[in-house]
Image (cartoon, rainbow over all chains, first blue to last red; front, side, top):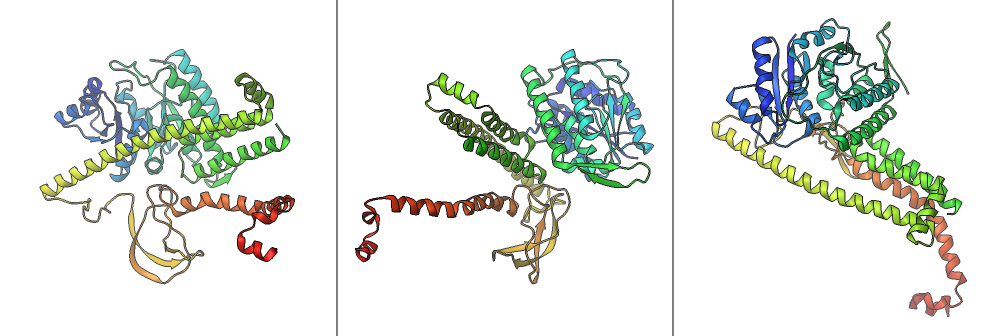
Length: 245
Length: 233
């Protein structure tokens, strides 16, 4: 099973070398692609110097566009599994094996690495946790997917949904919406526990004003997704899909 | 505020919401861009359900009628929307320019290096999202020549008009890239079909009103054009 690790990076000059060297030396069984989202700093130069496998976008598209580029790359090169892995050092490649296991076993289409299943490691600030709980409840209401850590960018996707995401992926704060769109198209979503580290260097791109916009926009978007699509349920016993509104 | 106006506002809210959701469903609009229209239509509904709000603000601002306040508010919001659209448009133009320049430079580099695999500079069609298929030309109901192609599934990239009626098979190559999306013909026509129905609905009423107005005038003969006037007198 060929696996591609998608590493979106925007202005991650300080972290990218550590992350990618770790991946190359300790986990050579995974292919990787760095998606440089038109970074203003030396991210692209560092990638070029060290001869990393990377793609440089000419215009800044945001995290959604960057990750979707990774999925398009995975589709074009016919990978079986794609794993999203952040370039800022918060994710630990040791957990990639655990995250792809349910896909290899055929139990799930999309697997999300969750910080909150075992509550170890970096848990994020209290305010964000409240927001994440609310989104988790909303997503469960709208599409039935039980996910505790909806904003986690550490996820693995199987071949069918690589094709789906390559064609359609939300652009602004995409993680919760991506769960909803895939689930409404019949994806089986599972969570596994992972431990994440706190960001070492650099600045996160979220602040208070953006957090409010984020919550409002994502909530409305999830509701709109549900309203405009209806639900495709997969009957586990007979493995047929039927659509109900 | 009259009850008629309030009903009209609620109907307008419903229509705007329905239409916006339809566009989202067809992937012709992104959810981020639709937020303004959803909020605007809910604002209209709120004002019509709670006219006290409009009365309060009209009093504070010194506007005579609450209805006038509604007009002012909607105009103000539209001005903001037009301004943000202008901003977005400028940014898009800039991005497009950069992208175009980047592509041109890359094509030049490839040409110099002597390889053009997968990227056909002259036809500019070697793209993973588009496939060339033979199409049939024919005329649809309005007599407009269209290409008939089979639609593909979920792709929402630039598309060529689809659908059309039977026509003679044609060996001309057509690029099919999917349904809906930015360039699809149905996108351009559907805006006007709404206006068509609204106008049709009101036409008899307008006719009656004009006749009423004309016959209520004491000096109606002078309003007529000279050729008709001569015959009337």
